[in-house]
Length: 69
Image 1 (tube, helix red, strand yellow):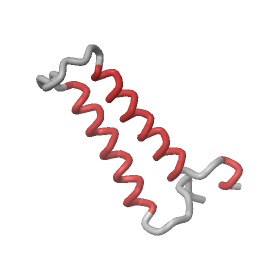
Image 2 (spheres, rainbow, N blue to C red; image 1 turned 90 degrees about the horizontal axis):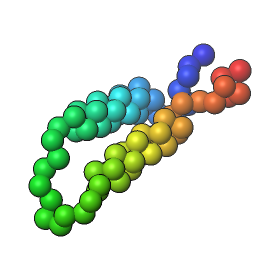
Image 3 (cartoon, helix red, strand yellow; image 1 turned 90 degrees about the vertical axis):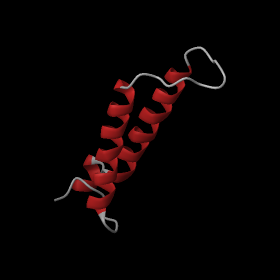
């Protein structure tokens, strides 16, 4: 029984999700580059957007416990 949903190339989607997390962690550790428009705490918006996208992606590729039975 697989924890992934039954769609074409599930390992590719899982690999993309893992790569997304690695990219998110790596970019979060880098110093913020200068921005053309100075918006206070704009990095918080981008962190929120990245984490929300990765959470939605996980909800899409992983099967629910009920579906695995």
